[in-house]
Length: 85
Image 1: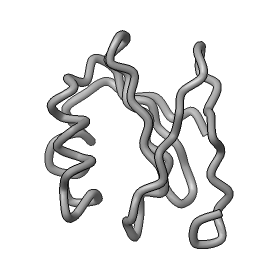
Image 2 (image 1 turned 120 degrees about the vertical axis):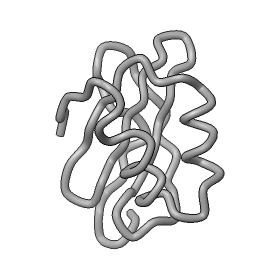
Image 3 (image 1 turned 180 degrees about the vertical axis):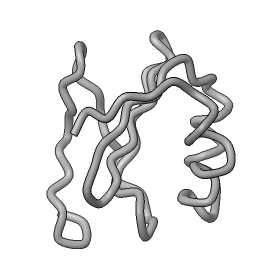
Image 4 (image 1 turned 180 degrees about the horizontal axis):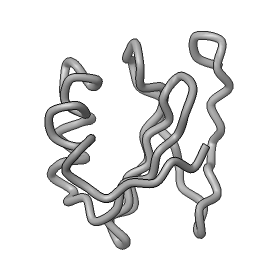
């Protein structure tokens, strides 16, 4: 549990995805599948799946000191997405 939100080890969207808890005021956990280039981000109150995301973007997010800012600048309006939770 992070900030009162239960973080699941896997989110089922087709195949299971391992979610990694992150330190952020808005993002709770991040998962990435390099074979399908699928990025899943679990926020405090919602979860989104982003399609066709290069691994470099995922690595940039994970290495960013401000994951919320990185998401807003490089991911949010740049890749097709679907709210999945």
